[in-house]
Amino acid sequence: MFSPHAPRAALAASAAVLALLLTGCSQTAGGKADTDSDAGKEPPIGAVPTLLESRSLVFPLAPYTPDSRQLALLDEAQDVLIDQCMQRYGFRFTQRRKADGAVQQDESRRYGISDPAEAAQSGYTNPRLGNTVRPPRQTLGGNEKLVLHGLEVDPSMKVPMSQEEAEKSDVATTVVGGQKVPAGGCLRESALKLFTPTKDTVDGMVAQSHGIEAYGRAQKDSRVVAATKAWSECMAKHGYAAFTDPTAQPPGIDEAGMSSPQAVTMAKQDVECKRETNLVGIWYTVEVAYQQRAIERNAETLDVAKKQLDERMKLAATLLAAGA
Image 1 (spheres, one colour):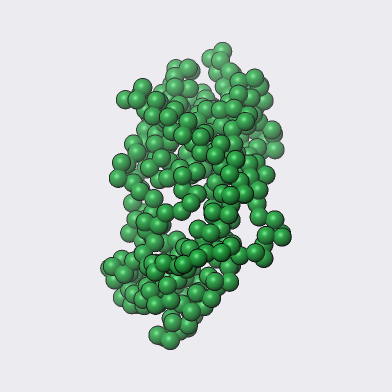
Image 2: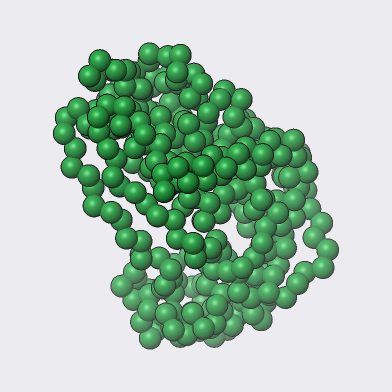
C-alpha cells in the first residue's frame, strides 16, 4: 500500500501508478468493502460455462476501470501536461510516449497459463512481457530537475491531494525564476490535473480495489477451491504432484527455464488439466459474481467514478489533439 501523502513517490511512474499514489487505494475513499458478515456468504453463480483461454474474458467492473489502451493515452496526455508546466519556467519535457492503438487488455495469465498453443510454443514464458521500449532519460540541469520533481520533503508532510487544493497551498513549494514550483513539481501537478482535479474526485482506484478484492474472495471461494483441488489432482496423476497453485511459478522451474522442453511439457499438461476440470470457467464465473455484488453494493460511487473516467479521457483527447 502506498501512502497518498508521499509527494516524491509519484514522480517517475506511469499514469496508473500515479493515480494510485495520489489517491491511495483505501476502500474508505469511495466504496464499501465486504463486511465480516458477508465474508462467509458465497454469491450464487448459476450455470457455469466451459472455458479455457482467459485472454478475452470480460468482467463487470471493466467499464469502471481504464483499460490498457486508455492507460497508454493517459500516459501520453500526462506528458503533455508535464511539458506545459515545464514551459512556464523556460524548459521542455521531451519524453513523449505514444499510445499503441493495437494494445488490448490481456487476461491470458489471470488463472495461470490456459492457452494450448502458447503452452506448446513458449512453455510458461509470457511472450507479451518484456517487450516495452522505454525512451532514454532526459538529462536535467539543477533548476530543471527541481521544476520537474519539486523539493525533497518529509514523506509525512500533508501535501495537497487535488489540483484545486494545490492552487491555494504553499506546502512543499519552492521558487525558480521568480515563479512558484508546486509540491512534487510538474510531475505531480500533471497527475493532479489529470487524476484529481477537485476535492470531490472519487478515489481513482476504487474500482480496481473492488476488483482486487473480488479476485481474492473468488480464489478462496469453496467452488474455486474445489476446482483448484481437482486441477492439482489431475496434475499429480500425470506426475506433477507439487502443483497446488495454478497461478504460481511452476515447481522445479526457475526463471531461466520457463521455455525449456521440460517447462513446455509441464505447461501443456497444465492447460490440459485446466480443460478437464474447467478451472477457468468455474473461477471466472465465481469472480464475476463477486464483482457484480461489489457493483450492486457500491453502485452510486462507481457510477461517479465511471463519469469521472469518461471526463478524464475527454480531457486526455483534448490535450493530445492540441499537442498534435
